[in-house]
Length: 356
Image (cartoon, rainbow, N blue to C red):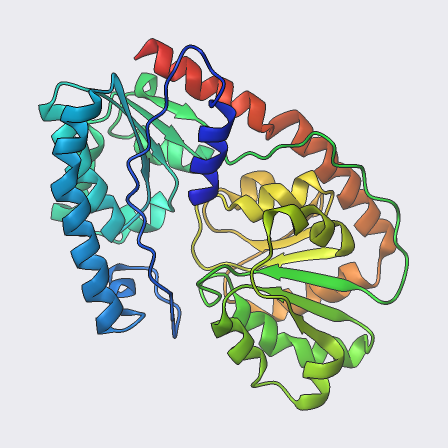
């Protein structure tokens, strides 16, 4: 979500039609996730100390928001929304905005299906009530569009998928080396992204391809997870690169041969769209809007979350077929430019601002 906000602000910085003003609701607290959590339990997943800190930061931001509205007097409120606890925090911002008579555009960036359908009937009612406050809702996937259209007028919904700057990214050349590099980008919560499953199939994959290398990007939690492997596997078949700078991003994607993201819970992650843009073959899961981007057997492989047998099988299938990797690569590079251009998305959003 932070990357989306940065893209939005930077692309509109020279726009003489709109002045963008940021109200920052981020929680700059170090994440220390210990397990997979995709519900309200995630509040306590990093420990009680972080949960309390996060609660106080939310209260502080909510308290400041009405004064921010009065001082800046915006015409349109653009709220970036995600699921579970953050959704309810953003509901409060929407409520204050409604009281102030402002037009509200909600761009829903979380995994709506899991959030909505795991809620009880009272939870579902209040989710629908919260969404009804928005004048326009942008969604990442057709799945979310259809789910919301059961109770939100389709005229109030618009497809705005994750997108990326595609200019100046060259098409990948054919790599037929046996020294394959598999990239995993796990952010601050590698469990949710499927790191545990990757590490569990890694020994079996390395047994078939001894020169294969798994490149792991993410938090120190991920580094600690890697340390549970045998020393020989750690040294020969894994590399931990931590968080990488934006300026190094495309070099890292271009140096890899396959992207792995067997997530348990997603909306439509940026890493999938970035992999498309760099022509990187993808192995991911059926969650969120991923399967609308990665078509199984056409530009990547899709598996069920947690299916280690399928994950191992698809890794080996791609590792053994440079022709398939090249086919997926060309399809992804083309698809990113035709369907997931950042410029087109910014234009869609600016059109929404104008209409509101």
